[in-house]
Amino acid sequence: MATKNKEKIDDVVFSYDTDINALEEENKFLRETVENLRREVDHFKKPPLLVCEIKELRGEKAIVRLQNGNEFFVDVSESCKGLKPGDSVLAEQKNLTVVEKIPVSKKFNVEKFVIIEKPKVNWDDVGGLKHQEREIKEVIELPLKKPHLFKKVGIHPPKGILLHGPPGTGKTLLAKAVASSTNSTFIEIVASELVQKFIGEGAKLVNEIFQLAREKSPSIIFIDELDALAATRVDIGTSGEREVQRTFMQLLAEIDGFKNLDNVKIIGCTNREDILDPAITRPGRLDRRIKVNLPDEVSRKEIFRIHTKNMKLEKKTDTEKIVKNMKEFSGAEVKAVCTEAGYFAIRKNRDYVKEDDFLSAITKIKESKAEGNNEFLRMFG
Image (cartoon, rainbow, N blue to C red; front, side, top):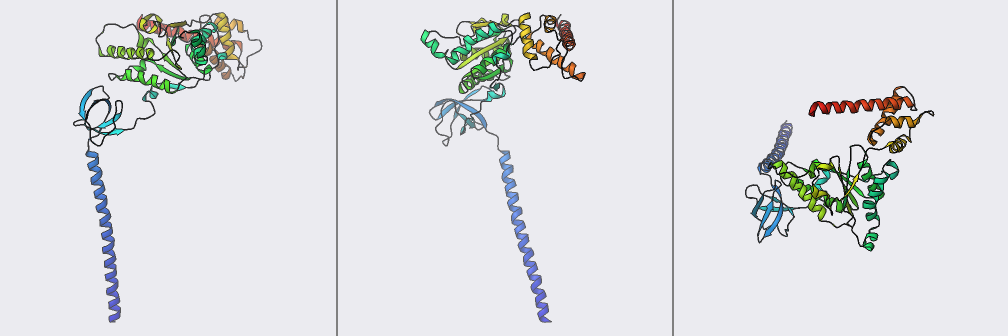
């Protein structure tokens, strides 16, 4: 009996000891969890560090520039050695003391604002622009492919060209074709995107675009809607106008800053050549102007042939009649007619396109143009 009681007591004591150990382990785990949470809360309470750029070093101090363009003369932490102008650093919010250098990313911020591609457009895809094609080959393609010819003769090719004319006439297509023929990186930007809301950001973007172009050379910088940035300057004191002019001046400085035979070429594009500032088209900048007009009947026929080469047409289709009905159509509108004609065929469950499909498509495009003109007149007439 005593033995049994002793065994029961031992079991109770063992169970008690086991519970104590389990509770102690759980208590230890909870204390560690609380401590980790306390450290995490303390970490979250710390103010964030500011990202800034070293502009100039003066002994143990430095002039730093913040993202908004403001500059400050600040201390540099002893642990932060080997700094040089242009480095990106972290600084405390309170007194802007530089506490850490951060590595510069190889990825350009400007890549968010541009389209970078290797075009696959051939000269065979460009129709009705033989004169413009010859000029752009002389100014862009020849210096990139055979720079030694210019060195032998002792002349400097233009740094860039200006394509101007009505919308949809093939200006972008010409630029992509020459980029493809020279195996160049095509960097496409819209001029209005360069004007940023923060002072100095637009100029910085322009600088980064040209850095990017040099990194990926041979390259072609295609600036669409150039008139949004390079319109004739006026004496208006608004901050927006000053920022546009600051960005424009940076663009001019970048164009002047590289040599004619560098593997970077600039193609500007505009529908409003008449309002451009003379500074952008003076000799040494975009001094070669190439006008891209609406195609004539011969050119429209060539463009029509390019866009219908993969289409199945009815044998009795009168292409001459179709082309004559597209008088004053741009190249883009000719392409739109071919697309719409294909839709008319699909709606009628046909795998070929008839002459009536093209004529119906022409009527639709004409009506769309008329509605657009009427809307413009209602708004601004």
